[in-house]
Image 1 (tube, rainbow, N blue to C red):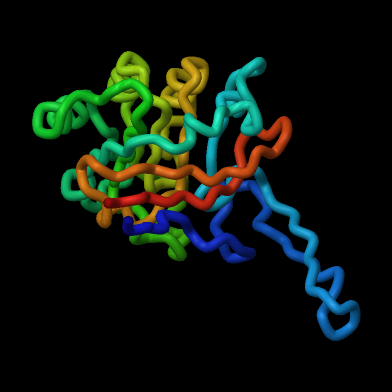
Image 2: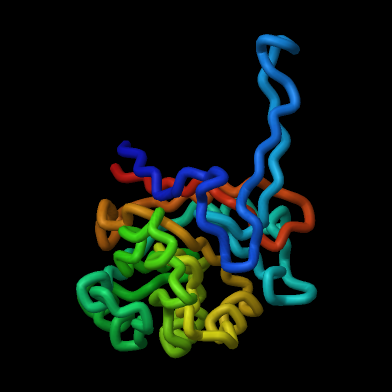
Length: 222
């Protein structure tokens, strides 16, 4: 089995959502002085490669710790729209995009994850392009509605959000999270995944009451 890491390194340089503070790390003990190395970390819940629980947008929605582990290890279905996106920061993944994927590789099935490759991760580390003035691709509402209809476990993407940056109303979040889907945002390296056959492992800690949290996301390939 091959293990592919789809996660950004997480540190003070990781680009946060505009207005959020970056990760801060304070050394509290050192090997030289105390015999061990310990830091205290302060970070927003939605930083870098991270998980969105339904509670992120739903008042009584499930928090991170309430997501069953079996819903975090699921078959991945890659929707690769990178060529269509190109350098267009406002591209909306359409219903036609998803249906074309299904026509070629089979229908989305309940419990799978829709993993969307836009190619925008090539700008990670370039804040002016990766975040810009909140200009990055995402899903259109019709594509999100089909995902809910198909009963999938979640949606993962290589941008800052499953919604386009220009979508100030967060229409996709408000469609999918109330239906119980989760999101993974900020993935990298999705070009290494096949259209089908990979197992997605979302390694998010069960932080009690959390709306989301940074995650180590892996793909397993036979």
